[in-house]
Amino acid sequence: MSLVRRSNVFDPFSLDLWHPFDSVFRSVVPATSDNDTAAFANARIDWKETPESHVFKADLPGVKKEEVKVEEEEGNVLVISGQRSKEKEDNNDKWHRVERSSGQFMRRFRLPENAKV
Image 1 (cartoon, one colour):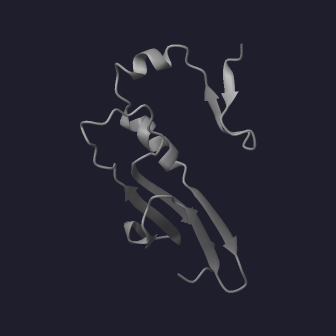
Image 2 (image 1 turned 120 degrees about the vertical axis):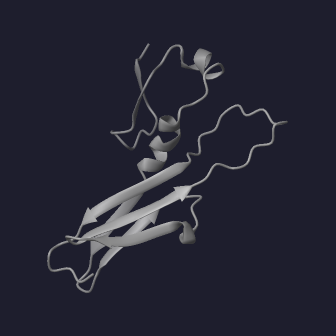
């Protein structure tokens, strides 16, 4: 019996610890907001530099373009932030599993000194 299982075999850093009593307490104790936002906080963002510009691509499923803010802070820091809200629940439904996260995220990137912002 393994205490560690891989959630993604292609990503060696995505290790989930096995919790033997997790399924027992999940029905009694509601999920915390930390668990809800953990996956969203790890939003995948690619950054490449071309001769003309810096290009950022964010993988934010379920987030509309209008819900994402891109700002500049002092010191050539680019800030990408946003929020994904929980869907409205129908009290007649019984959820067995919810894997889509909700909450806020913010990522900061320090641009090179010679970058024109």
